[in-house]
Image (cartoon, rainbow, N blue to C red):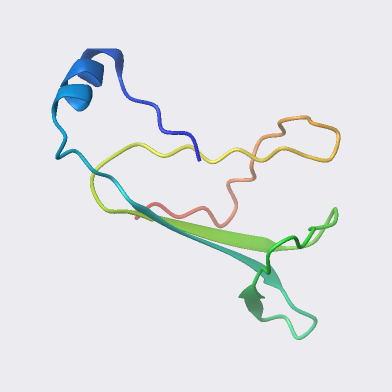
Length: 85
């Protein structure tokens, strides 16, 4: 996970040892029965397989989700089913 701090806040974050941010992340794939199940470490999704993920930060922040395919390309994530919390 990459944490990017705005330039104007960088020194403040360095100086303030109390600044913390944690993020809960979950990855799920659609099983044969149509229900979503947790992905296991090292699992590989194939083209066309349905997946879902969630992120829950401990505080206000901006999060960006990027998907890199097997060719190293960065295709746009589909917005279908995308929900903002």
